[in-house]
Image 1 (cartoon, rainbow, N blue to C red):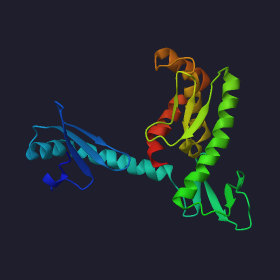
Image 2: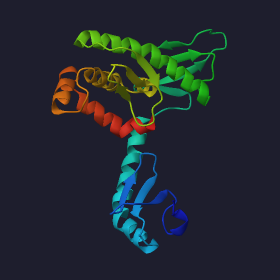
Image 3: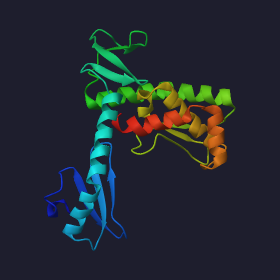
Length: 226
């Protein structure tokens, strides 16, 4: 049950939820939403008091997320993000197929790529073409074997690998820098041999992707804004 209506003193971006928990906790989301989970027995004054204790920390986190968003997404009105960089979109009604010029960082197409559905469909096609090729290349380079791949729109995952060595990848990976998407692909490829996150797993990831910690940090800071 959500209790925002009981706490008019709290900012509008705070969501309060009663649960069967022993202690109250608070989480700041990259979107700017603040989630508070409190014990069912908590009074309105207790919840408000808990927020006051955490207010400075909450405001610092919100400020940090706002800075990260400004750093990650520096797009003009006519630009889209591809491989971690801004690409200018040029509409050309005469062009039958979209053309991407990586040197000039330009996407030429007759489609309106700023229509939400068309944009996602375009991104998904880029993801299928690029990520499938890249996965096969990295698997060959590092001696991995996998079964099938799928491109999906997972809410909380960048990739996954099943016990049957089927790999699923998030289409938004084509928005990330190459070193970031390579890390995710190699992460899932390592799972074809080690189906856990043990020290041995991370040692294997480090061999294939020496900058994996940098990639993980990029996703943590900027992934929510893609």
